[in-house]
Amino acid sequence: MGLGAAAAAASAVPALAQAGERPLGPSLSALAKAKGVRFGSAVGAGKPGSLTGSLEDPRYRQVLIDECGVLVPENELKWYALRPDAKAFAFERADRIAAFAKAHDIALRGHTLLWHHPKWFPAWLNHYDFGSGPAGKAEAQAMLVSHIAKVIKHYPQIDSWDVVNETIDPQDGSIRRTVLSDVMGQEATLDVAFQTARAFAPKARLVYNDYMGWEAGNEAHRAGVLKLLEGFRKRGTPVDALGVQSHLGTEDPAAPGSLGRPQDKPWRAFLDEATGMGYDLLITEFDVNDRDLPGDVATRDTAGASVAKAYLDLMLDYRQTKEVLAWGMVDKYSWLQNFTPRKDGLPKRATLYDDAYKPKPMREAVAAAFRAAPVRT
Ligand code: 9MR
Image 1 (cartoon, rainbow, N blue to C red):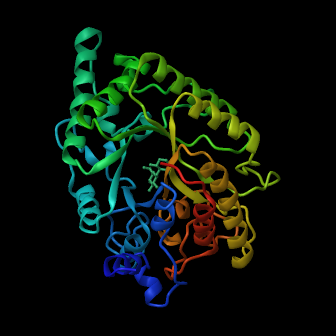
Image 2 (image 1 turned 135 degrees about the horizontal axis):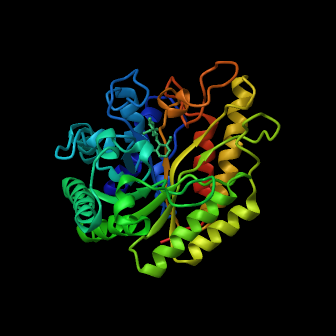
Image 3 (image 1 turned 135 degrees about the vertical axis):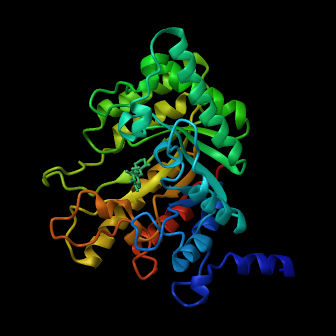
């Protein structure tokens, strides 16, 4: 091995591992990369202690540096975070994440140019009066186009964009209505978003991102997403990939409100249809909600890791799966701490690292899935 190769091999060994905090071995980014996959995580710009905050926590930063080949701002690019009003842009928080990624030679994804759901529009936009008729339509379109153009131009380093997020209503598979689509039309609103993204980021991967899952109960959601993807193809809308969020649950059909039993067969049928239309796949927001598992940590971690491994094996079996992003890397920063709390009140263990920044069995499950995955180009 030449000096260069030795240095490269040494740099693939995570710094925390060198410090003896976890077993030696290649990073998740390196394991994924060997198979043609990109691995990374979401991160928030906030202060330590704030739930989505983590970039200011040096130990968390080190985990990201050690493990990730790509980062995505968890909330900072959403309209409600970026757009205080119809004129202004508040880039500062997302800029900090972009600068961190650049400084450590980590790629950047963008989430999201249009979360097409009134619940996640800023109030000023929900109340915006576009009027009716052609003038209102033109004004809405101009606002959407200028938003997307400005954000994309601000972050030339972003090479993969969740252009549209979660616009399918899981109840009936229909496209959600917003103040924009009410004047522009539903399909047209989404098409304009993708066309604008393509115009300003011609080389980026353009993604439709949603949370339809492999559990029973998601049939209408999956059918709606397939219909949407089919429409994009028919109209020639430039969409490259389906973002499969992958907020997994654990199997407990008996528990009230359980996320439901995973179903391989209909799930594969869904993925087959999407890939059959020529879409790539991305796992964009991976985590495991351990709400229904027993409190005992070892039991919980083993069960969570096993769900993760089964799911990732299936997903990586598709050569179209090109990126895998965790929705946070350390339990205490997971959005799930705030969502569907456990009955015993214990903190959730939804991510790959525990609150002492130690790798959990789920980290090993992800590593094992990458090791077992077929190579793709
Ligand atoms: O993790 C995010 C949480 O901090 C925010 O409060 C929430 C609302 O903006 O969004 C969470 O991230 C979501 C993502 O943007 C889209 N898919 C579902 C994610 C989890 O709710």
